[in-house]
Image 1 (tube, rainbow, N blue to C red):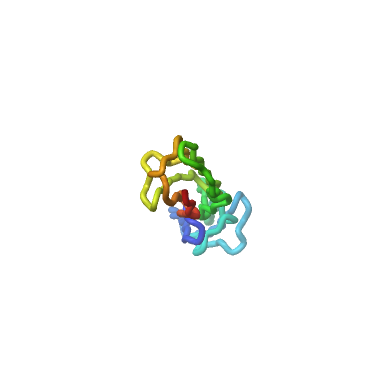
Image 2: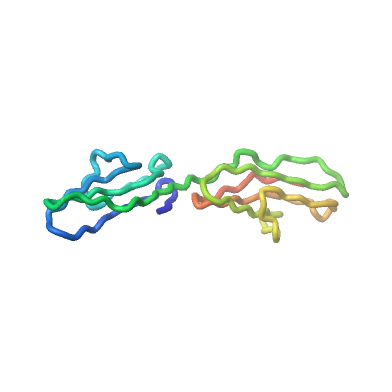
Length: 156
């Protein structure tokens, strides 16, 4: 199961056999002291909750262990290095870079004057032979399973 940081995550189990049942949830194969019901719920999932969960179900006949289920909590992306201002002249190459930290695959979309630039979907934007028509504001939008972040504008 994958959730965004702060979202709800719920694991549940259904057992058949002679009741009553006893439940003991485990995190990374260690008992979770207060987790003794049919469901295990996180109302505010955090990265510390990442891991493997399983439940032991018991009755008079014995104890069985469920298959493990993995919880992945995606954190919001953070720009660790915004594109830098550059002093360039007509004919020079423009090169803007961004560094983004976050969980999962990072997708990039560069924008010029708040409009998407076609096929500019990497962490670097390069424009060879800059012309006066390239003057304007550039930024990048980075998206991960944990959310979206927008860089500062850089004027050219």
